[in-house]
Length: 453
Image (cartoon, rainbow, N blue to C red; front, side):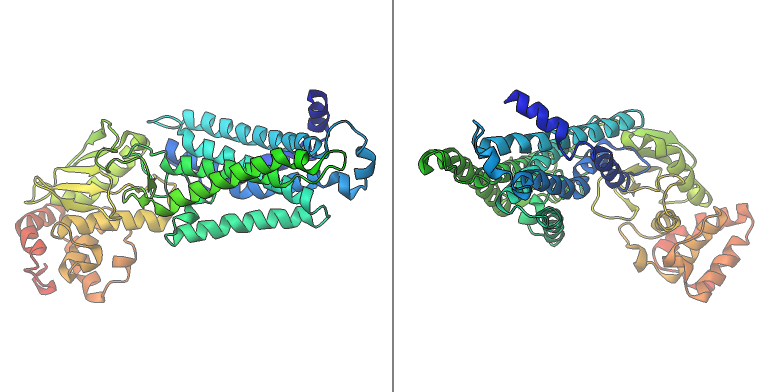
């Protein structure tokens, strides 16, 4: 058996295609790279690479499994001592082995790069293990397809079918279907997972069980009758594997369909525990600025200077004014906009921040615009609910900080733009005094554009 495995490993069609596999993997992972190196993101990027590697592996496995039938060698090989099913399993194992080697190599490369870039945390293994099980399942399904339907068209059709099933599952998951979460390209720690919460392995365990069940079922169903052995003897083990695989798959699908979804990560909750219990512990990284002290999660430490400079430039004319927060802190929040809340007041920064010079200009402008609006509106006010006066003052804050507004203020009413321009024309000391005197009235909706200097 070991000698046959060595031969199959040397002559496997996936071996010369490993560079292509590596390119597909790296291309898929590179599309998900964020400027801030977060272990949670990089680990899920490895799993999401299955959208490129999975169909490729399934197609290669189908090609290798149908090799004997395509070349009309089944009669010749019938004289060998091993049964056709056992011999085919060795071929499938070789294909699966090379696919796993490629997957592990990509994982090691990603983790090595992240280790030199990340400022907090450690590798998250659950998405990687779920992805490994998905690689095995793709190889097994492709092997079964090649064995049962040996044809030149089986290889491309298998790859297309696997990709389509992944995409359909992902689409269903985005439409709030729990069964869709079993798609290999739906990350096993939730699309909303963040560094503020400990990783829940619930979905990863369900996904892994589902993929291994599919692999067992595919291996069992790939068996064909052996004329040299009785039908009962030849089919006992394959049918047992198929039954176990189908039972495991059905169990995991039932668990996925009947479980609840956590609010903070969008993940399945099978093991109990609340969002509060699942909060991670950390010491924030802070920068003492004027007028605000800025604190972020240590995973975002490299972004702290950029975020602190952006917020304090905007808030500078409000220094010392009543109601101005003394602290800005990055917190886990379902809201996407910075907000002033709490007592004493704190400017909360959402999970997403501006990523230095790497973010699209529109994203950075949106972040700065919402910071300016949060500083001049009552706590909890949505950006689009700001009054004309509040928009004019926010636009003035952005102009004095030499920052461009986003679409909320960029296409504001001409009267708002004119009022902001007149306000920005005041001397710095005069603007500071006027804002300190009138900021309470601005937040209370007590002024009109005619009241602005």
